[in-house]
Length: 103
Image (cartoon, rainbow, N blue to C red; front, side, top):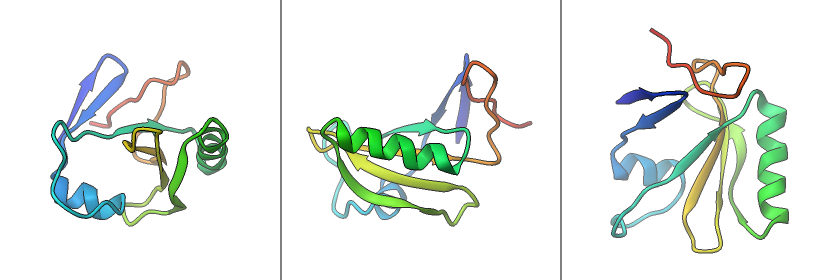
């Protein structure tokens, strides 16, 4: 389920499906959550993942064509939390970068 929140989107996704997508098996840790950054295009996904790694993150899932039709990858921050960087052709971005859910 996706909810529009003033330029942000809250997505609720079952942990088992998220764990499969970001290659983190096992049961959810307490307070399990991931954050997704929505990029404007595939090249931006690659660039943002590289910037995260340069800043100390670990590349966890390299960018790839996703089963849902976009392009995404994951990095782990220094505390081990997964962050997705994705280009979603079905979620347009406004000029200011906010996400617009389609009708």
